[in-house]
Image 1 (cartoon, protein in one colour):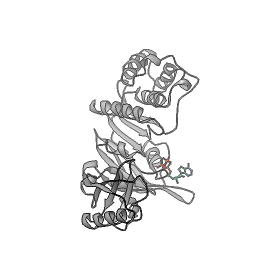
Image 2 (image 1 turned 90 degrees about the vertical axis):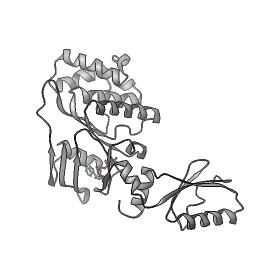
Image 3 (image 1 turned 180 degrees about the vertical axis):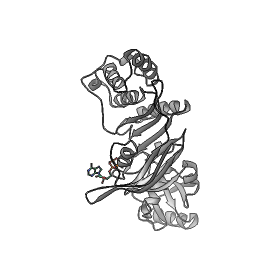
Image 4 (image 1 turned 180 degrees about the horizontal axis):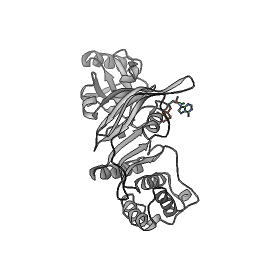
Amino acid sequence: MIKTQQLNKEFGSSQAVAGVSLEVQRGEIFGLVGPDGAGKTTLIRMICGLITPDSGSVRLALPEPTAEQGAFGYMPQKFSLYGDLTVMENINFFGSMYGLGRKTVGQRADEILQITNLIQFKKRFADNLSGGMKQKLALTCALISRPQLLVLDEPTFGVDPESRKEFWKILYQLNKGGMTILVSTPYMDEAELCKKVGFMNNGKLVAVDTPGNLKGSFPYRVLEVKAATREPEIFSQGKEILDANFYGYKYHLVVRDHQAALEEIRSILAKRDILLYSVAEVAATMENVFVVLAEQGVV
Ligand SMILES: Nc1ncnc2c1ncn2[C@@H]1O[C@H](COP(=O)(O)OP(=O)(O)OP(=O)(O)O)[C@@H](O)[C@H]1O
């Protein structure tokens, strides 16, 4: 449904997007993942036709939009609505931009607001909505044309975890109904929810695959360590430890060699007279995959 070839975009001396060739198939939820400044927004804007690439091409295989079904909906990163208009007034405004009649917008709005759980807030000013609700209103507006392709730029950035979960449930529901979704996110837990993930950094797309395949091809092991300490950094200097994360009562350590790492863990703790409770191997997460790619300089 989306095909880009060798897309490039420079801003002054900074290469925001560098040679990105990407394919999003119909029916996918494709996640663009990467840190701030990776180039996700610039890529999305080129895909949506909002900025012109320096070179390369974008092809969208979308049928002509009709009154019944739009081509694509776009939800930008920054809040794009009018705070001094109510929920329904914002929706009407977007509907009129798509050339839809008031009656059609009203009917569709009721359907979508049921899905996004905003139905009882129709008369509330957008400024008075919570952060999560504002995002859901922006989504409602992006959906008013009933698009076949939905493009969302960091839609849950800065939103609380509960609202993020709810937002993703809605995306799944839309996808089940046949909508293709391209979504960018800085959150690795959201990357796990995509059918396919493209990792971006420094303007480049460095890995594209399903979360399962990305984790399956992870070349290292992850050890969960529990010990009588709560020092976040205690394992950070280990030579056998490629990445260490502390979760309050346990550590997740990315290691090359299980046995060598175990010896090092024991030695670090023994030197400080700290009791080791347990070590168990656990499955790699997308965060593990991403951090190691980044540390290897691949990303
Ligand atoms: N209009 C612009 N003018 C100048 N530089 C820009 C412009 N837009 C983006 N950049 C630069 O291009 C690079 C990529 O930015 P982009 O916003 O695409 O990344 P991103 O992955 O979406 O990050 P973020 O989540 O922080 O928006 C950054 O270095 C950014 O400063």
